[in-house]
Amino acid sequence: MRAAIAATRRLSPSRLVVAVPVGASSTCEDMQKLADEVVCARTPASFRAVGMWFQDFSQTSDDEVTKLLQEAGQDKKAAT
Image (cartoon, rainbow, N blue to C red; front, side, top):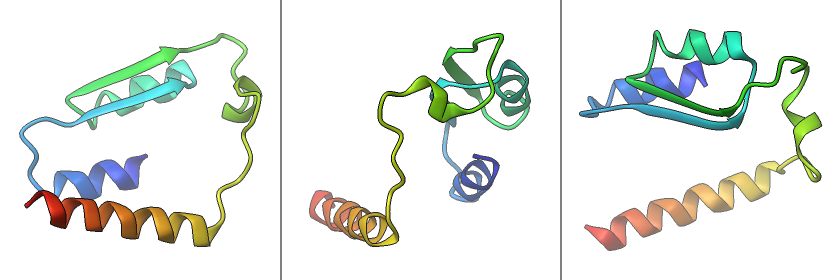
């Protein structure tokens, strides 16, 4: 998330909002120093790992990520 925030900051957004469905409260607090707004829907006291809070937290393959990024790039081109 820190890398994503840094990369986004270089694009000079008017506002940067970080949102996650679940996270450690300490991590969400740390993100507040980097983003304009942080939304952590759940910050359970017994947080150990994100995957514990999802029924299906299977890994995304490199091929799947590449395809999604290419599609996002095509969508952006079509919108301009």
